[in-house]
Length: 626
Image 1 (cartoon, rainbow, N blue to C red):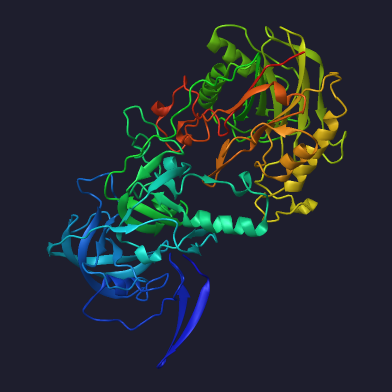
Image 2: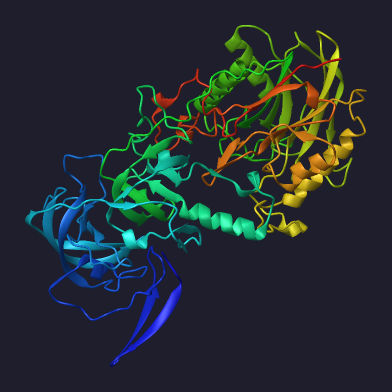
């Protein structure tokens, strides 16, 4: 773990520059010492600092093998090019680890097994922050036994990795055989496909700070520290990226199990390693290399079809850059035909994306669907979705609202609806900077409003579908800086847009002559952030605010609600139920339509709605009265 710290140590006749690096607590700085002869304790090699005090020196150590991750042996599921060695007797110094990784390459001269007592001579090195011994010789000298050390999270402290991110400080356990004594929750599946790892946390799944807390600088800093202390990565014990067999995808407690965020695992045992994972390209953090096969418990099973009740069902769905144009790398998308395309990279990927999206829409069975992240073309993206959806359900049940292109961005919002139950009232309209200067349409997609009539009783409802500026890129050049209070980039841009939307609706922009308004979409703001507060101040109610730990998206292993349904005061009593349909955020992305990274195409299920997108849809049941 690079500390970027240079220390000069004055020894007799020698001035030695030292760079403190490597994973660890940072409680002491490694100090270069003269080469030592004889057999050392492994704890001497590890030292009490973030890197070995013997880095670069040749040492001899003896110990018991606690983890066999050698290449070329009968266990092809655990290949790290070496093994873990541990002192038979701990040194009683809590600041030093008693274990170390011994690297012996692709074709080790000596095969070892767990329980072997061995002597190793080799060179000490720091590899992606992990202290290792690169073996020159390995000798079997007997057998022994070492029990796993019980540890638990949260860790007592944090340290910073070379990316300046906070991680749990577990340096004093590096290389040791450990067992986590508590049940841990699955929170991050982002690296499951590429690097075979699963993000785990103590104390339940992790949530974004502002999902349940008011924005606050000190509170957010404390949240980041605690979050880091609660986290660990369960690695697959492989050096190679993009594994053909994804070790943990089906590693559950039932025959039909598929791993989801929110599931749990108890008593995991293995060697603790600090690294970037497979090939050195993953996140630099602490990883457990299992020595006992992990098994997950399904406590967050896949949900079935959403049932809401009422006489009308409305849905909001971010469809993950659904483009009817293949992304070939050419700038041919957008209203001017000059933007980069997004989404599917081949005709096959488009077919897969279309199939999953249609499966999800068919199961939603909503009367009206507001969509985000459609390709902003005249009609092709919407027409493709409608055709696939109608083909799937075997009727011409759905049509789309024909808006043409909207503004100049590569993506737009849109509507699907059932003409058998729903009729249009008047024309659609959009909110942009020309109507209200507070609505920055260079950052936010224009808000799209349309009034609908429930044919059965003539009741009218106006729906506004939105996609506000993301937190991903900065708006600092426009005076909207990240205040480090948990709301991320561009908070004021989103807040101004929310205020403008509320004021715009007060003018009845579609001339509906009805006070029932429903604001839906990807607002890119968590529950307690300023844009939602702005709607509340204007008399609207967030239909998710009464739900405990609501979420629709997972970012940085933390769940939170970015997608919302916000109702006017007159509409609230007509709401029967609001459902966050968790078909996407909790699912590993290797089940989506993409075919990248050498993915096994057989994992894809066109008839399954799971991982149709990265955002969960919202489904709202209303008993709409005239």
